Image (cartoon, rainbow, N blue to C red; front, top):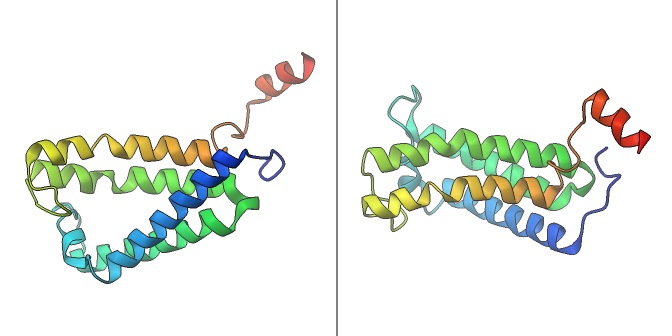
Length: 148
């Protein structure tokens, strides 16, 4: 169903803004903010924190560019970005639980408030790409929708 249902200008605008922000964050992962991002790598991750930061930065650049440039594939891209945001949430949680400073998050309350932005990002990407609206329906739902 992807690409068949048009999206509104506000959805498209938000999708492009989210893509640009994600790509920018990815670039900063591998350049200027590399050490600060390492503070978010949970201790339970059995990989070198620098490797995790670089790999996630490359993923963010790729996903951000996909949000901007792959409009015809916006639904699967939206789901991938939402899953990525879910996957990196433990890093935000670890930063709060272990009181790690980074990006101006230098108090427990600031780090805690930040946790609520991840669900907002997930909702924004699902809305802006139409991923939730255009998700595959069950056969029963499709049959009921077509019989109305």
